[in-house]
Length: 440
Ligand SMILES: Cc1cc2nc3c(=O)[nH]c(=O)nc-3n(C[C@H](O)[C@H](O)[C@H](O)COP(=O)(O)OP(=O)(O)OC[C@H]3O[C@@H](n4cnc5c(N)ncnc54)[C@H](O)[C@@H]3O)c2cc1C
Image (tube, rainbow, N blue to C red; front, side, top):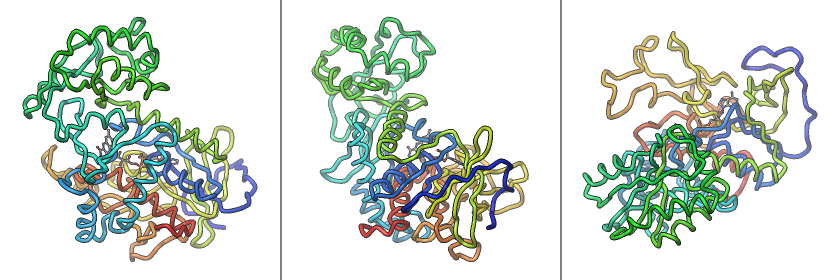
């Protein structure tokens, strides 16, 4: 038995091999979570191992599939993929884009965190950011999706909290007005018992799980409702009782209420992560958050297991298939140092890098370059249409390892507005291929 990564640590304990198809998913971002859930649904025994939660716990929570599409998003993806054969969408195929998103939305509904999209015409939503800009993802958590401004020409009220640092309704309303949207702002007092300025969003959300706290806010907003058609709040409307909080506020205020993403952390991403963990555990998947995978254990071109770091002694887990969903440079999936070296730490897979010596080719001259910087847009793993990582000659390196999500080369995560769609499409494709599922 040989290995690619680091040298074995002392005191490992190899868990006995379990019966049946085993899938190890490395990473608990959108890609890893969807891959794990899809494998569980297909009847596989699954172990998800992650150093920490993925980027969803700091993002706005929505799903960007192709933000720049003005019309039908999937038609735009299809056209774009036809022109860019190395883009992850082209490799995964448009079927995987559609099914990956549908699979995610079904799962989100099942765990009680429903996502919504404009099913009527397949266009992007038009959603408000905390700065009062408009972003155009395809799907969003229900509370955020209710803020869709498509065809909205009426009047918005944005509500913030006195003395709270994470949302500035006047700024958001001012910027919306400059875009011709009729918006004004008010602030209300925080619910009784809340710490002021540095109250964490999760603490505020837990307070707003309580009917009394919501009533206190409703009472303060009611005098300001004249001429208001829709009411936006920072995305802290409840943690465990989120949907109840949303409908309670909408009913009592007599207008649709919606959420605007705040500064990180993201509560919708936190709720999604926790509930997906529960869903996986109830289906007897193993979920280890807080553990790094140190290396793949190889037998020729097959990965037969992984070594996982833990206090005391490292553990070895065996599997038939491994999904590498480690998130690229932002989350440890690709690492770098001051010499400009870039490497993939688990399997030592080849990493596409910007041209030039050391770090000389990493950055453009201007900070806000329209294309972003080469270090963001040119770094990643190349894969084939089965999501298997390729070697320098373009041949698949390993038979049963699949790389997915932000880890991949071939797209610009900062400007393409499709990173979340890629996470879902490639995770879907990898599991469908690994498990030989017909529906792809
Ligand atoms: C603030 C912010 C806003 C964003 N907004 C948008 C947007 O509007 N539109 C858009 O398209 N994209 C956006 N993105 C990017 C997008 O959210 C991500 O590309 C996508 O969520 C990545 O998902 P992923 O599952 O591939 O990776 P990640 O979410 O990065 O997950 C990687 C996982 O791998 C784990 N991991 C890494 N190495 C190891 C290891 N050795 N062992 C075990 N675990 C490991 C990590 O702990 C983590 O769980 C945003 C990102 C951020 C941070």
